[in-house]
Length: 286
Image (cartoon, rainbow, N blue to C red):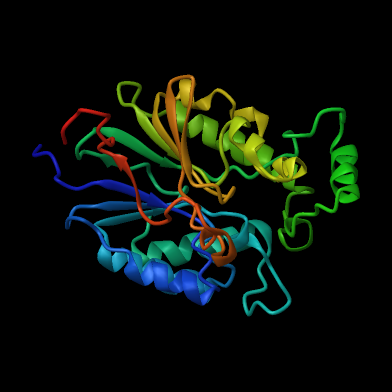
């Protein structure tokens, strides 16, 4: 097979309800006709906005791979689509399939371009409140501590777990399902794992409000980057775009975030992040 000249690119947290962010989306362009784009959640809240954005991106990029963030799963009173929980997620999966956009419910594609072959695995895992602050032992204590400090995630009002009894129960079900799928992947191929939340807790320690970490993932995935041979892990949600390394594995936070965040002085440049081929190190050529 002839190696693709394309690049595997990533972005997340487009939050297209903001006019300034829609302008960023309009500016996104592939570098070649063979570029893939990984979208790691939080395109927006309204299905109409999500469809419009993913439709535009799917017209520009050779392949678009999407996984949901928490905002896509919100059901607000103003939303014309009043589906909740699992039904809302399935509605978004069907929307993506109409556009030719791959989701966590589709067979994992293999990237054969530079840096490949690798299995590209979009994951939908949610969180289970296990990223707790020190000194608390239960979800209830953790939520109470956060509320005392003025931190309450909007998910508590708009992200419904139906038909699961709780968000952590939905997370548990998604983790079990996804773990089986990843274990069944070709063991000879490395992976690029794409999830809205970081798979390990360490990236959340930079948060200005530590209490918010409990809405940012699950301890159940702490070793997945090693168990499932990750070449790179792509995530968003934290709105802190940066590259970190954990156990020798590259983690890329690829958020755009809100205009009030990315317009601050010295904020990292937002936009497409190259995942593969890897950026050359000092003194290395392309």
